[in-house]
Image (cartoon, rainbow, N blue to C red; front, side, top):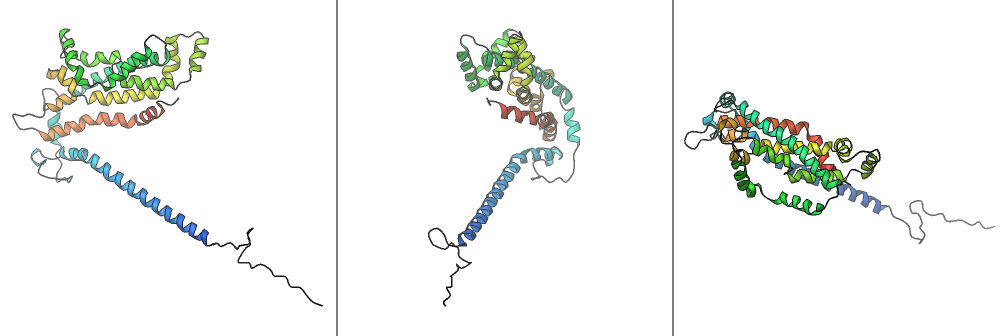
Length: 314
């Protein structure tokens, strides 16, 4: 009586459809390749962050140097390199505050008047112009919109001479009117375009629903569109504040009386070509003038990012 022995397959090798045993070594190689790839990605990320840190340090170094220089004696500002402080000289702030004809707060008040008027003018005029371009239908709409976009590429220095002649003939030179009146006429095409893109992202069904309820364009603009434009309005406010507060050329052209000087023109008065320049006082008042810009950007940063991120989304 014979017994038949069956040959069992080896447990180490599994048969496949083609009759060939599979090997687990490619899986080990694949895991090693994934580990090497993750290490390479980590190295690239560390290198990228290192480059960003170095670039950020280079960009912030002039500001840090100005802060340190405002705390040094006037004769040691350009003699001691670096950011190391041997002593604190707080007198630069006290002397710089009262170094000019008026206290420095007087010039900050002048800048505040111009800034507040410019913000209100841009918010009112640019929002109304943007609603007209985004929602109304009128003859020559595309032509006027194209001309408005072309003014963004037109440098301010090109129109400063005819504007000065015009304002001089009506007696507005050495007043705040040349700096405020253009803002009431929607001359900042960048903000008009920003709001147009934002309004185009608002569904028209809201306008139609308000129109069914009997609302006209003024009520639709005030009750429907304007409350939804808060991010765009906040972005316009922040940019207008920064640009107007730091505007030097326009204030220098139109304001000749020291009583009317804004902050940038007042800072220029610290530099005297005929006598010694008080660099310590200049740097100290520059730091003081940067504080409002820093605070506005700090508290309005989330509105700024939201307004830019949502502009153009349809």
